[in-house]
Length: 165
Image (cartoon, rainbow, N blue to C red; front, side, top):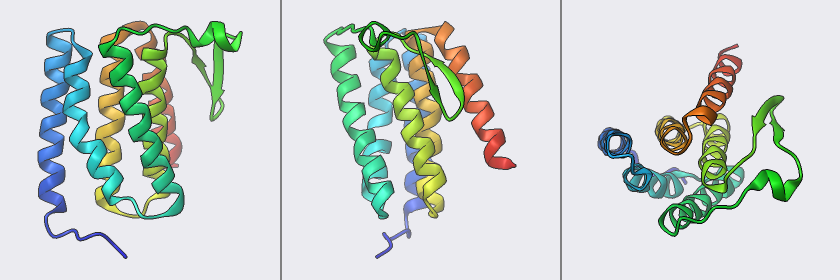
């Protein structure tokens, strides 16, 4: 059964503002945790709103990666995914994505899961939440590693262009 949407538009506006404040604070103070905390209500509401089988799995996976990323940043856990996988890059939807520190790979994975949610859902509010998550995930990557951010931004732009065609 569809989730009620009586106040969903207002909730999405408020979540957009909270995420924007988190992005600006995180980048201004060079504290990605501020950006992460600004994203928390959006992730929780996304999990609540998803209903389909694949979108439920994607939103729950998103929440799991979100929690892990908080732990990685808070505990300053560094783990080079490239060394573990013995390759420096991976192809995602035909795009070359560099691998590196797990703290940067996790928000990239969050963005990919949000793209899955955006493409698989029919609900406009769930799509809205996905966009908030994608943008905020890019901001987290930027605050952690501006060079890799450029690559992920290119990936995001190309995916958006593909969706429009």
